Length: 366
Image (tube, rainbow, N blue to C red; front, side, top):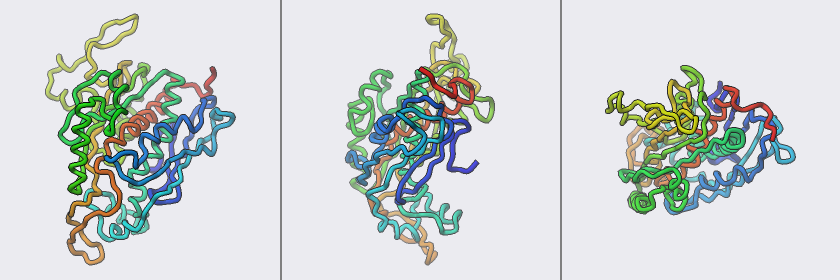
């Protein structure tokens, strides 16, 4: 299957480039009968949108979604759904320098070699974080489908930026506080420290990375397929498709490697006629299948590679090493815009596996 598609039953194809005319996605496999309109997608796009705070790129894009097929009278028809965004504030002049001087840490050089110099280098082309807007469009529909049919809810938020770590918060507090600040962190005291750290890095032409945590509740037992389409396998593949993601862990993750089995195992007990566990070190997944507990995962984002600080690169015309200071408008930290992207990507995978497992019918009737 081509690399621009994701899923087997809930299949998304992403198209467009960072500085092309438009971005969009075609979604095939969404059941008929789901109430759907642009207002179901727009809130997540607004949370991901550039130029909304001082800690993000100042590129100004309205990112108003337009659904052009697959719905009728406010419901999905079962036909492929196509949605697009028009690019309006691209400045490609900055990228002429990049064409012959690839950015350290970016895909410029391997993409140029792979496509023989024909790749669209403007704004990073297909390798730009701008393309996450296409994931948000498809993922917002997946969120609506999961909530409407199964009562599944996914919540993501920032837990770390640089070496600043948020204190652990409960899910209710996370939902309440995460969008009250520019960095999308539910620990409001640490959020101010994170913002200051980003601004300090930006001032010296540098960038920071961080961690987004994601919790999904209401997932039925048994979602996932054995071995190569395990829930962890498919989630990891999809999450690593988000630009700048370099780490994914579930449940106790690497901390679990320092525990004994007696500490890391999650004992079962019965609560209101439902089998649950006293802890959730498994992150809600056992043997690649959901076990009914919340799915808990964390995603690590590297520092943005496009920075004003001078770095070394190779001039591809002269073959000599040269200095590079990346011009243009770039995120000093991609993490504040990432929570809605992570939510949407997780939802895309869950919707696909839920359809494959027969948890969601092909026609939704209410």
